[in-house]
Length: 96
Length: 159
Image 1 (cartoon, each protein chain N blue to C red):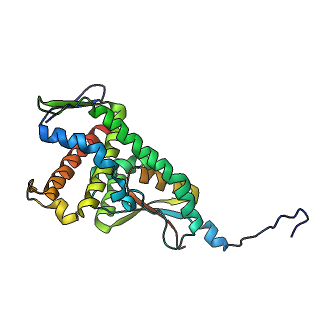
Image 2 (cartoon, helix red, strand yellow):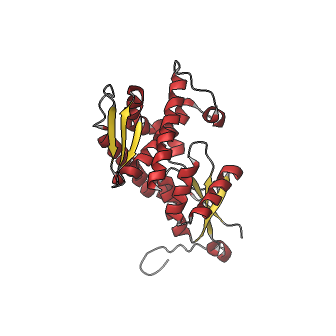
Image 3 (cartoon, each protein chain N blue to C red):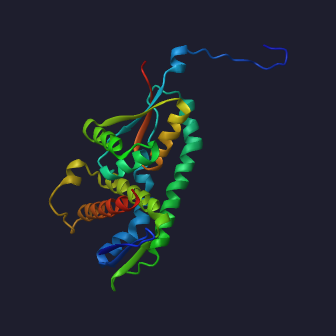
């Protein structure tokens, strides 16, 4: 206990776990139109049309596509935007 | 039903058949039935390994924003539909360019709700047979296809 009376809790995390990037993954669903998903990828992720189409097709054929990777805060913001467009998106930490 | 795009990027639906006028009029209501599709419209963004704190932060801060955003979209659509009439004289509806995103969003909300309400799977949605309009399910399927077709057109305009 410190002199001020505050209790300090120190959480320790593996350095690798902190630095590992976060992935934004979009999952397939039978409702969203292919053209709509492509448009959303262009808008939210700034992909050119060809790249947006590639990711859309990956979602369609493989069930999921990793569309962005990087720091957690930005990844959460992207997932929020994708949910705003009603796409099924999740946040996953890279396995290293 | 016919479609026209103005130079201002506004979009007009006109000579709308009474059946389609009815389906359009129902769009904001169908889109609002979120209780039937709660988990799909507000999916959990985290895997099972994620700590509860992140999940409750999301529920507290992000979900209310999504609720507001979806409601605003439905409201914009309802305003545009106020000029629709009952379609008996060939209804019309103008979608201003600034409302295109709201329409795309409301159409998606409605389609997700309809799928959950009727437990439609890929096989139902891609069946080549025309839906049986004598049944509630068939009418819902027609609504799905109609909303999807409209969404496709609007993506072309907005994209």
